[in-house]
Length: 68
Image (cartoon, rainbow, N blue to C red; front, side, top):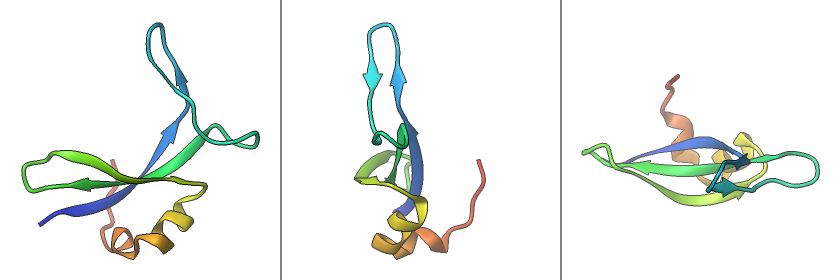
């Protein structure tokens, strides 16, 4: 069974890689990640400004409570 989680992705500037996300107000966004039975993860949706916004779009993410 594939499970869906909301994750926070923060902007990052490395030596040879980078991620730029967010807006003038914040340098992060939230994405929905699907994790299958084998533990493989894939971003299936992104661009949400808040965790609550992502959960409203993907209600099944709110059914699993986990802290990492």
